Length: 268
Ligand code: SF4
Image 1: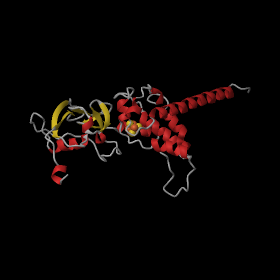
Image 2 (image 1 turned 180 degrees about the vertical axis):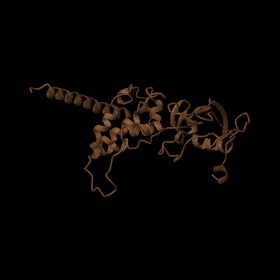
Image 3 (image 1 turned 30 degrees about the vertical axis):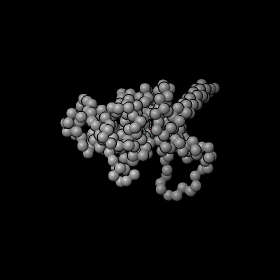
Image 4 (image 1 turned 60 degrees about the horizontal axis):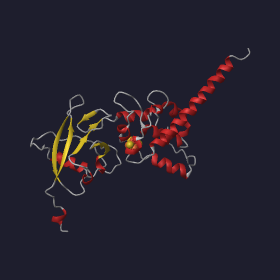
């Protein structure tokens, strides 16, 4: 194939129906666009094409569509949007596998910033709630950490691949704009840090953070999260494991309260 053929653009076009919203408090609408077909194109490359020439099918020049993207290789997690009604990463959504017109909408469980860009602060607040980190005392050399079994290492590796894309929250019927359910990603991160030999030192705090309203017991077990996770993280297993840790702590608390009562009502 010569260079001219390799760069040849088909006369076919790709049709899009895209959600437009000028500001968080403004009503939304759909606008339709067509871009030239290119073999192997993905949704992000088409959005870039629309950005270069933001003209609707009616020939009206409009402000360029706003969306988030960074790595373009399913690592940064920023390009999660609803594509034909299903949440997924726009960078790995190949046009040839999508029905047209391709409908692009922002995730519905996060406030819209503009068009397809949403504010995912909720996810980062959830990570703060579950203390999704390992506290270290200064930056000096702490020496070799405790040993980990290869089995734990491989489990933890998968959990650590979460890209905070928000897809699991978007697909979860328990997550709504007006509740504070932490969602599968943060629960799974609590499991990750509770498995870490150093992270275990703060495991009770993480488990307590998952008790009560918005915690792990708000999960309705729909199991949608695990189906949409681009990293195939075993989220339902993480939820089950953290539920177990919460239950154990609740029982431990009950026994401690009983012991305390006995202590107060003893002879004396
Ligand atoms: S758990 Fe999966 S779906 Fe949820 S935020 Fe992490 S990578 Fe995305």
